[in-house]
Image (cartoon, rainbow over all chains, first blue to last red; front, side):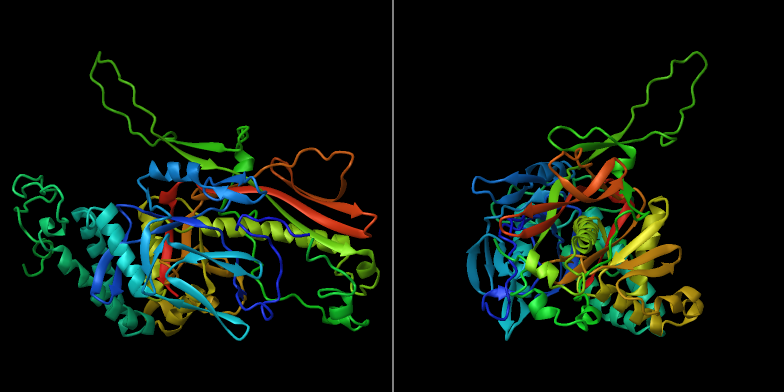
Length: 251
Length: 315
């Protein structure tokens, strides 16, 4: 017997070979993306290396992370994430509206979740992943540039234009340490040798962050506090000292 | 109605189980079948706590007792002021899950293999419950503090960085790591070419052994597992495995209510709070159909996020 599922569709096994728009891909529930002022990563984008938010995906899967089960009027069972989101908000997470305007694969959409029909229930993916069929098998294409543009949008709209200085410093210190470790291992590990290149490129991202903080503010924002008056968290640092200088690099 | 097992349709004995030889040739399709149910690195909340609210939420309090706060020196005749107990809270919300397999009488009597026997389907239901729990857990593991970086392969350095981060954060053992098979393969590949101390570690050689999905062995005292259910991150660019110590993630299996006289119970699996998985038969005599129905009520949660790290590496 078929039954309504949390993925929002009936679990009906379909022969993928006979249904052109049905994908043989694991089912997944709708989800909410969340960002956090402390969760960042360095992405290699078409603009070089950039520090961008690392988003968390909260699946609307009943039973996960406090997502509750809810039955809609038409009998469909869905996950109700409201309480889970409230709990995450108290830990600093910021939910991204599921209907926010985005651009993916060159087209504009409202909402970052896209639903496909799968052989074992609905599939929900980010708009920047696209499923398509070749013969009977399902393949995926990605719009990395579009996703990176979305992350920039999140950074500017929700996260004050970039990570706090202390977090950026910790990230750079981590990457520097990883790079050092990879360099030591590079002579005896192919994986580490490949990592040296990636990590070195990623460290470039912090040069952008070394620009005065005021340049990260968007037009129309309140003027940033005078740097000379701002409390400096780093001992012996003078106002205007760049991150590179503090960490021993060239100013 | 859909997906019932009939003698005359696919899947059914007429298509897949022709003749006695079929009983030796019926094989399991590829799939992720490694279950974390009852794994020692997870907290089974049902063992420690009762008191699920009527709305189905279990609040887990975390407190700074057991020596977390140090004493203050006090002057003679001075009054000792109270030290507050720091608290945090996690919530676990079990949800209802179920699986039904309905077989016609004709399909059952023409099945030479016993595959569609109710007890065989009951065992399938119990296995499915374990996989459902594993799937929920895998979805919890993205969003912890991150180790590794987007787009870069998983290397031995990523593994060590996670281990060091947990040790530095005072996380008690035992530790476990759950990786996507691709992450494990990248790590294996890196270990394969490593020189120095790493190449002489028996554990390095052990990690090269082919074991299939599931438990892969132990490295530096950390139990390593792989699962196809590990989730993707960064819009499909990366995999989000995890390394964690006990106390990071947990699950709660809500006990089934008492069986009522109308139920034909085929199998019950006991958990900490009573029967947690129940398989019953549902008979449609007029339609000559029998359904084997498995019930499981389960929820997972991150109890203390600082006890784990999400392992990010490129797909």
